[in-house]
Amino acid sequence: VGLITFTLELPNVSPVNKGYQRALHEAGITGNPHWIAAVHGFDTSAGAEGARKLLALEQPPEAIFAITDLLAIGAMCAVQQAGLRIP
Image 1 (cartoon, rainbow, N blue to C red):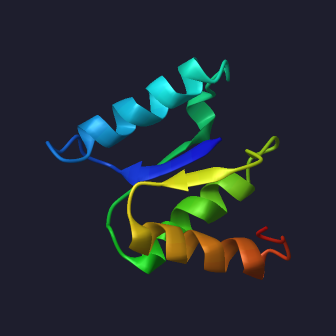
Image 2 (cartoon, rainbow, N blue to C red):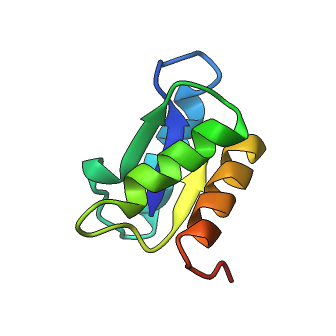
């Protein structure tokens, strides 16, 4: 599971990032540091940028979690533009 998050550790972002790590741990999923895409904004273009980074990896994640709705919408657009299906 990949993560699209903000570049800086802000007070409202840090708990979400820790929750992502905890959820992976509780599910028995080994995290991959390459699957964390830190972006410089909270808008749809930043979400698309993050998704493109993850999709360009040699072994991209099978799922993506974005910390905000706008990042998720941008990621969804990039995923669809890459020809992938979002169930």
